[in-house]
Image 1 (cartoon, one colour):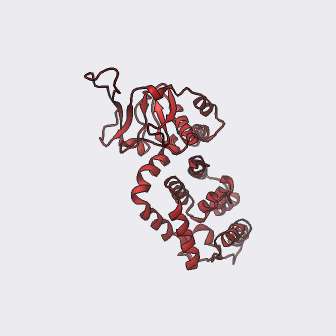
Image 2: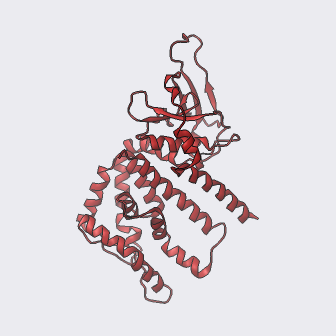
Image 3: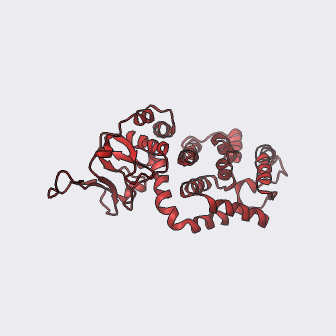
Amino acid sequence: MAALVVRRALSCRNAIVAGALSSQNRHVRGIATAAHSETEAPSSSFAFSSDKDDSIRIKAPSSGRCETSSSSSSVTMPMSFMTGSIVGKRFYKQVTTRKADDGNGWTVMLDYRTLKTPSKKSLKLPTLSLAKAIAAEWEYQQTDGIRPFTMPLMRLACTALERVPLTRPKIIENLMKKFNQDLVFCRSPGDDALTSPVLERQVEKIDPLLKWVESEFGYKPIVHSSFFGGKQEVGLVNAIESLLKKLDDCELASVDAMAAAAHSLVIPVGIFHGKLEIEEAIDLIRLEEDLQVDKWGLVEGGHDVDIADLRVQISSAAVFLGLSRRC
């Protein structure tokens, strides 16, 4: 019974996320053709509150202002929106996109309210495609509650706009700290019947990626069998770090999210350069575990949940990366 419930929940979640991420989804098409007459609508805002209360608060426009001037209404959401809890009921009817007030970027509108980040900054997105995808996530929310865990693109956008600019050096430092222990550098010993199939699959699937790294950055990666990792050439380490420093905020947020899910920096770098597709990346990440599943079977409510979660994390970050690019 529990497994059935989990599968149904995952099916619902994947359908929602898949719809939000698909550029051909009917909701995205509907938003793409929606009128942008809101550019003349009153200026309003959607923001988050640090209050512990999970209720949604709506601040009405000031009655003392002239009707011809821009009214300032706002919707305040609890900080639990960013932690995964179900937050309030859907309070809006229509989701649209429009050009930012300064003409630089795009914003999402909930009715006549402008969507904002948790620190009350305008959610200014670099491309219309990304704005429409995030708008689709909001459009998919049910009337009984707003579910942040079905909005991975919204989360990544908030990370790119708020966390990355403030902590960029720390993010890069943390990524490079784990580089020597990267998943693709670790090899199974292959000295017995249990580990030799793993080594064979690693050579088959991972070696082409390592050869690409060598041709792209000019240094041959060093593989190892130690749990604590080996040490890569200084030139390769410097080349990867230099690449990270050149990424814009959206790109770095995407790479960081994929690296956390993959336990690898090389895999998201491969996705960034177009060397790996999403499914190829997921297969590399799960290479050893999939071999165990093939041998011993899949644990319902365990392996299937992990697979679904990994797909959402890698897919959403990869799609966010692609949609955020202006060219």
